[in-house]
Image 1 (tube, rainbow over the protein chains, first blue to last red):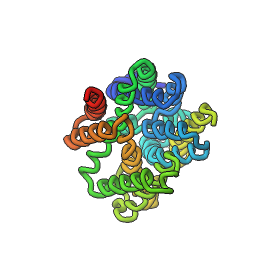
Image 2: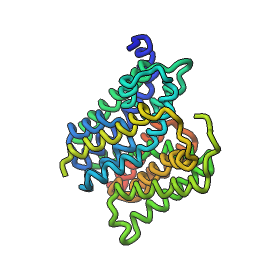
Image 3: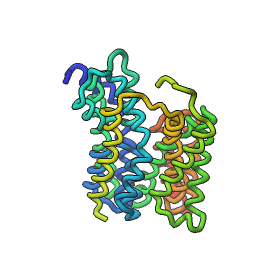
Length: 235
Length: 102
């Protein structure tokens, strides 16, 4: 462990820490509103560190679905991490051993991955884990406070806070959809499928977690066929 | 179903997705379809989770719709993640408050 690199990572991770804090506040409030207790909400955040995955996981838990459905949901929703881990592995280089890779893996979220890849010069696991540490602290403390506030606040405020997470998803999707036509198409397809699973008879009996998986796979597969990426884009 | 078992399954699956490619596979993905598919997954997934669920997030559908509209408008103007999230949140709260007063 290189202390200087670790501290540099912590500094670079501060904005992510603050962002995570505010969003996980919404997750905590939402978990409480859906019947979990504070300890359970904090446990989920401390062990998962993934906004979309946790959000979908919450849906799966509260709908009383099976473990298989939970695993399937996480596999699909978090599949992008596999791609990012591949890229991150290349960036660390062949000299970085398995133990360091196993520790770094836990912190590989969209934001920390972006920080790591943008690091000038060689990327050390110390830097990556430093950025990850402050982020996971922001994420977990935010969840705890959100859950605590959620259990005290009136129901109207609880509900409003749970919209925070949706707001974050909107903030991620819209700029991408604005920029790229295929992304716009992927968004509209997912929108359509999701509405079908909500309002169409029979389809609306499919549990919420599984519906998200089907909508995601169908939209992404159709877009991958219609608008494949250029051969070997540099990551 | 035991909630702690569910949380464990969730954490282990998520960790393995991150850890296996980082430790085992050191070559880049070749399949053009698979790379494209993974490229579209985040947007498709986040959209499916947000809509129409956001409409049912508050007591009145109109509040959720208002929150969605404000969020989309601000995101379209490339406002930061926190600004968009807080604005949607405040909109839903004010809308519920207003309906309560009427």
